[in-house]
Length: 375
Image 1: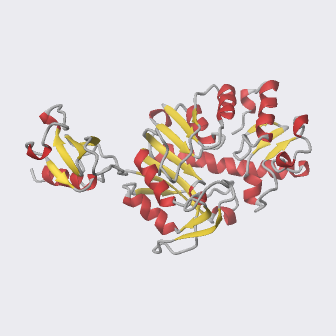
Image 2 (image 1 turned 90 degrees about the vertical axis):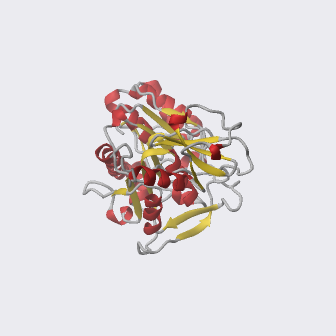
Image 3 (image 1 turned 180 degrees about the vertical axis):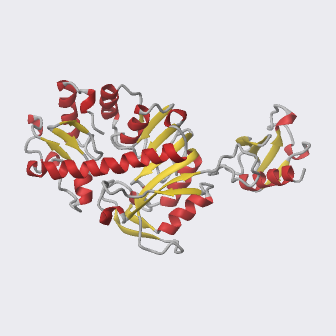
């Protein structure tokens, strides 16, 4: 994202330098000035991990000679190549956003979340384009970065310092959004299928996912692990593995099984990233067909169920076609909304007229569809 047209002040550029040197503004492709640019484009395109993520002509004095800071700084002699590779990475990022607008809907009509948002390129871009709400989640505290970039852009992108938890299979308190992003996150997780299931739970219309994939054929369902996670040293088994390669077929099938059956693959552009890098990844804008239509065969929204069968508390799972789908005492029920409000703690739901019983939300939804189609 080129911020120069927004005329960042000298104080804002100085703060950006500080954040970049601290690792809080480096991975994603931003241009603050001719003297300050960030992004992993060079490391990606040149297969040069560790070469540098920040071009900064005049780092703050307190960071000079600091080994951790030096890891982020690119050799000034590589300035032009660094800038060009990050331009290519911006092409990829902007293409992904354009695909969402093309296949999901106008950005001003959408809410979005980015799980593993880093410095916020996607939430900020959605906010800049007028999204109804744009939220970034990350285990690292990027709140100072969001504050600075919101100030420069005049946007109101939100940041939540919460990361995806394999132990909890989600993020505490995460709501639902029209579109949910997960860019280069799956590759670093031991439980990529649970992560996908979480995305399917909170995404109402579409999932945008991009990850490193294996070269297995599309009919092979596999996950390859390459190493123990080196980014989060405190991660314990079984959440300690890193650089997983999901087979393209497993990624695609997972999205389809959750009801995101309209799959639009990311395609490289001539002015985008080098093909040899791009082709090692796989990404989709995966869209769930519109359930508001009269198509009774349209898949129901995916629900990741974690209810305790011994818990007597009634749980409302969702509403569907004039029914409330609830979980009560180990069973799922479709309760006609025409029966009005009631306290199911004191009602024998099995005795209510017109109820539908099943062993899962999907089974209840299917029975509701069958009942309506038979009328």
